[in-house]
Image (cartoon, rainbow, N blue to C red; front, side):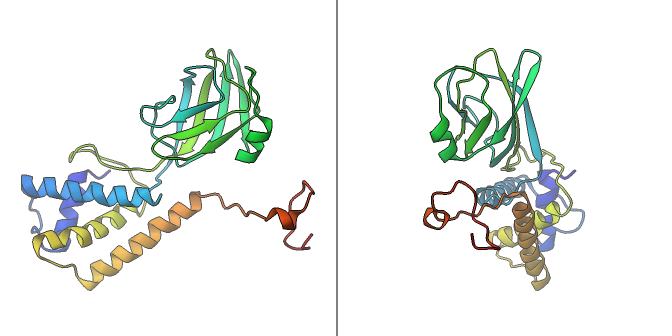
Length: 234
């Protein structure tokens, strides 16, 4: 489980910023820490860093409403999800799993009554996402949410994070490439190629987490409610 200091130290060794076994100075640690979090922030903005699915269990419903903000400081105060995979409403001892629908479906079925909804829609706007329900939730209910969230930064130089296989090397090589110019140095061809391979790796992993949805023009679909068959063309 690497710390931020371990990642900074490895990256500095790759371009000759420090020798083997040497520890970066406090100033170098601070600069490397800033460069590391800047790299991760840039990757997170592209939704490349999505290490794991998280569960926010039994979150209290703050008010009776059809929509709630989700993110740091939001109605549901947790890290803002890139994608929500599952929502369960908990009422008393009963649980109600919801299906995911589109914004159009929500707009066509929104109801101001307070009852258990049967679906949700999530809009991952920034800085807070918006979670929609067709009916209002009651404040006696709680919500459990399974989602994918980006990893954005290390809190401290001593913070440790358990990345999935392959992520640590991708970060180290790319940090070396980004950090070396601050020392008037450049990375070797081997490090440059490893950094490029690392970017390809994290982008591929991120794509594995995404949902691919094909949108068919309504003129093609016509007035029929069923989907368009790309095989038959009907």
